[in-house]
Length: 126
Image 1 (cartoon, one colour):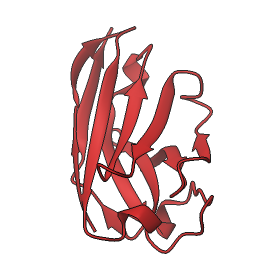
Image 2: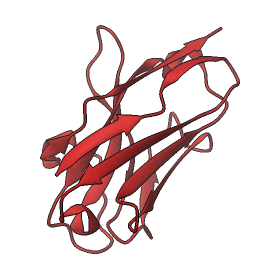
Image 3: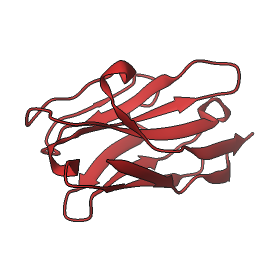
């Protein structure tokens, strides 16, 4: 699976962005997908995950109610709708795939993901 993330940019606090991640390859439909982020000088942080079915999702407490993950299996794409952005959301955002997942499986553990995109930068100004 190859992953291409896009949609990052510079936005003022309180603004919104939608990130996209397009996957190539035949395993997308059987993959749990996730979004992670990494701010300068910090470790990689879980943001959101979605099951291969799209039915089950999980969001980090820090983004719950502001961010929403979704997927379109016909387009081999996942999304991260981000609203009410704050300066602390500034980071490089990475999409990731965990292939061979059962239907409603989600995961917060970055070590479970075998495929990673290149990252897209989100910068929130105050």
